Figure (cartoon, helix red, strand yellow):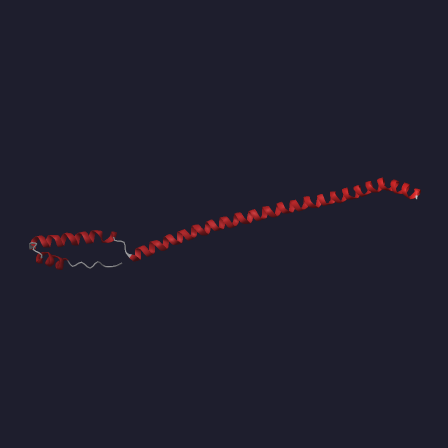
Length: 126
């Protein structure tokens, strides 16, 4: 902690030199000394501020790490959910693809059964 440079004797001499009576200057010096000693513990030093800011920074970083971990976990859960949904869509598409193949075969057979008699009649007339 930094020390405060206050010399009560020098302070009293300066007061005397400026015209303050000696007795009054001594009382002023004692009062100032008592005030400095009383309030010395309440002074905020650079070391104190550095310590407090470091503690604050540590708490903020811990809080941010916690929040980022929560966000990462949420994204991981969302990713798994989307993979499941995409798997479901792929299954639905495979089912639709099978249905479409079946319908294509049915349509082909239908066209063949309709065109075959027409082609036979045309072939017989030629």
